[in-house]
Amino acid sequence: MERLQKIIANSGFCSRRKAEELIKQGEVFVNGRQVNDLGEKASYSDQITVSGHNLKLENKEYILLYKPRGVISTTSDEKGRKTVMDLVDTTNRLYPVGRLDYDTSGLLILTNDGELTNLLIHPRNGVEKVYVAKVEGAVSSFLIKKMCAGVMIDGKKTARAKAKIKKIDKKKNFSLVELTIHEGKNHQVKKMFEAVGYKVIKLKREKFGTLDLSGLKSGEYRHLTIKEVKTLYALTKKMV
Ligand code: URA
Image (spheres, rainbow, N blue to C red):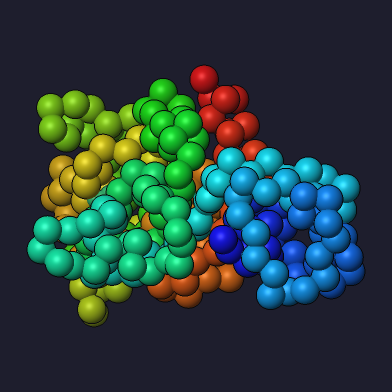
């Protein structure tokens, strides 16, 4: 049993706040009974109707997390380190869509929708991911171009990528490079820079497909809206 507004929000129909408004306005029915109390609980097997729409409650949950550094993106860790699951309040068994390294921050989707997960991580679908890397030294545009044309990592050439040099600080001896890739090999960004002689000191994923981190601080999360989930599905289907 969970609070009705939480179930509605988790279904992706609308935000929790909007769900609370709709409950107060008498727009919500549980098994045909109107509910006006914000404290009311229901279960995912109940038929919930909001503004005349029957919610399809397959208990699918989609979370967009701003993963901080120093958190592992698996659901458990044998060394007892903090995991991404420690950062979200859910009763579902969620899994990350792909991985971010322990020392990488940024956008990570957590869901129990296996179909969407597979579509999003399948190399064939090539969903765009945008990273900002802080790299040791002053990068050369020649080497960055070379990296984008494709470099060998783990015996395979990487696909074409896009890069923008955002800053070169010669005094402090670092550069900031925005890198857009469509693959998701293990430690791909760090290895791509390494392949042209650069060391990544800090890494953040800023975008994943159509999603970005706006409105979130490190460690915070929100649920995706149904529109965002549909857009992610459409994105992968279009690319097949
Ligand atoms: N590339 C990396 O090297 N690390 C990440 O966490 C993600 C992409």
